[in-house]
Image 1 (cartoon, one colour):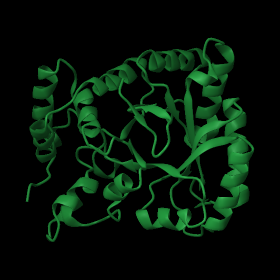
Image 2 (image 1 turned 90 degrees about the vertical axis):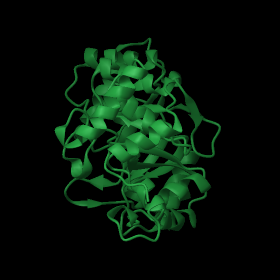
Image 3 (image 1 turned 45 degrees about the horizontal axis):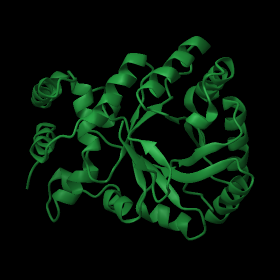
Image 4 (image 1 turned 90 degrees about the horizontal axis):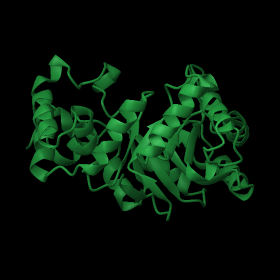
Length: 307
């Protein structure tokens, strides 16, 4: 497993993260098995959110930690997210953040989070309240590091005006087909579809400000229309994936992951799988370093252009 520094911190984190969104229906034994499978391949970073399974995903994870005493809290990096009230609103008020963290910790059965992210921007955010909540969480020892999810640079800058803690990570959707973060930087001063800057140049911003991008939905087509791997709609891409998988003695899934990890921004890939075998498959990508030519071949095969 390849490890990087999380943002501007000295905390070493794996390039592949175990995303826990799909774990709500696991039994305790199944969750124990998954955690062990992840740890065995160097994936000691687990990503949660209070809305995953309506909190059930965190409960199942917490039950696993309680049931298997060989699973040590100090051997794991546990991250969660808050601020989404599903189907109702986003809430980044002081009280909601504090209450959410207390609920997260109770469900997980732990005393602290390594990382807390604000889960999508709240248009009614009062950054002074976010700053107060972060100060309380840090001073109480309930959260060590802070970040955001799906935020643009100016939204981050607004928070940074008041928040004293470094914002170390930003979760953003990124995959071979969903690559506007890259495309808008390449198709500059053009009228092509990829030239639209939909994120405020967040890729360059993240590199300039030492924020780790955590890529979610790394195998998804645009608009969450399913996985591109093995899909006839992406026949050219799959042809190249198969060719490189054979070269590196691996799978198209691992090659797709390696494509993200090849970017010099030093991203993390969130593997949102509930399968023991698949987390190992995805983790193996950290040992693959694609050439520059291979990276571009995959990018073009995904339907992007080279101006």
